[in-house]
Image 1 (cartoon, rainbow, N blue to C red):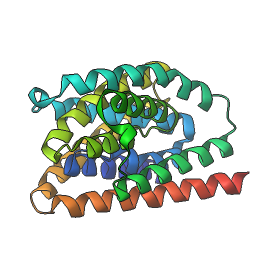
Image 2: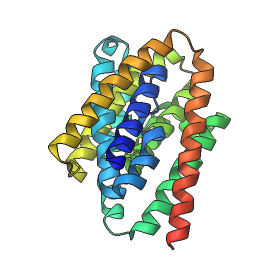
Image 3: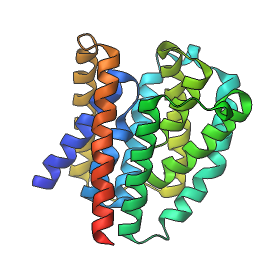
Image 4: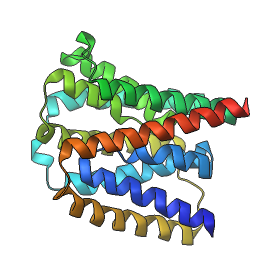
Length: 239
């Protein structure tokens, strides 16, 4: 019962911040899901949920998707998703937790600093960001930060970033689910997850009208950093 409540709480929080800021489900939820369900089911549940939320979010903004940038991003991601899946199936759980925690922590720090990298500009930058994002998404459930860094270096506004991030989320999570499969959850748990996603979406949309965007994004990143460090610590302890 306690685990079910924790699962619902993690999914609700992730869904809430995704609707509040246009990104962040995986960053916030993956560390908790991995610690609760284990690396395999935690990652694929994050892939399923983040992909479903991106589909719904994209329904109203698909006309603003930049196809020229998205094609190299998504093609590169498709090429590296199998590598992330291959790696996670061969690492022992403590090493996998360590790897996931390190990926989340480093990604959040880079996004917080708004890292400016010449290699993340133009078509080559899109390919690099997509490749790293695809690998991270299938290996650790967190594929958004490289795309965020690409958007920063490309000079995209938030209005431009959100629909493109959602489009990328639909594609890369579809590839990741195809490679990793779906989580082994009971029917009641699936019902709980869907209910938590809906509730989180409603709460997030309500809060979006009241909380300034910059403050909300900072909160998301700080929550993600806390989760990443916690997962990193558990991995180190297990080793």
